[in-house]
Length: 59
Image (cartoon, rainbow, N blue to C red; front, side, top):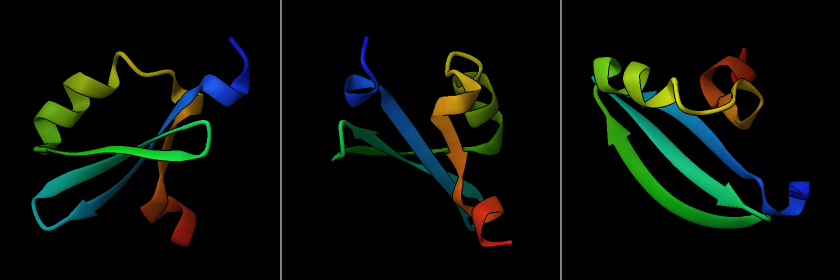
């Protein structure tokens, strides 16, 4: 699959939740929210290179 079709997940923390914004081929997709425990479970199914921590990018 080309990188044009790769889904990338940007995430950041808001209060007690982790917000995830999906992007596919440069197009904004679904935004979803997780508890820290749920995010840990959910992110196990995502390739590390497609999961980008925006809070880390700020530092």
